[in-house]
Length: 267
Image (cartoon, helix red, strand yellow):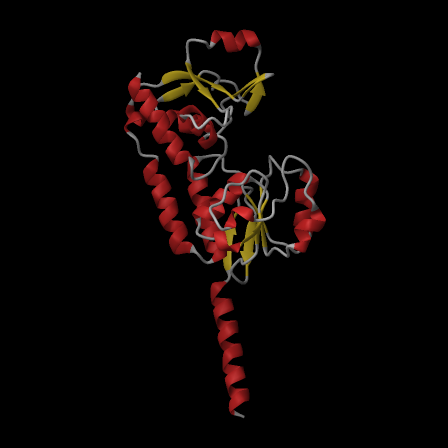
């Protein structure tokens, strides 16, 4: 009888704590994501999503991550899943995730549609502003039950964006995303907010596009603007580090703003 009572108490405790947890957040597509229990097996489908999970204090919940994700030891050997191509659906299901964090503009629409039809909770991460980066850190922390760590990280990120250059007259800058063909960013891109905080203004900001190909003539016309490149050279240089920091919308953008501001102050 005592054993039955103990089992009943344990069951009631489990049910009460599970019910007390139930987390509900909104993702970057305005979809509601609800988990009855904390996420324990997270799969990310983009490097920036991996950065967000790490910042939220849920690194130990990751079971597979997108190609090109950067992780600290001992998690740097986690299986890589997804990338520029289609998702390996069989591999994804084999990892039995209880939360998948996807990238709508980087993952294939049919893969996202398949995920939404599955029983796997999906959080769509597409930060369009720096405020959305902080919001995503907090949302993932809520889903993983690591809110205290996530709140600290999000607050540190927000404080890291407060630099003196935000009050300076903005200097024209031309952003090189790629050179063959020449590609840059227009006004519909989160990078414009990064530039503005650091005291720069995108010379192509008046074009209502995200990333787009630009003619060699247009690129040459912007030759007098401050050059900012997102092209990696993997040479350990400060320029390469900045390009890496600017490559995706995640918590590392605070350091990017600080480095750009330092460059602006040298002008």
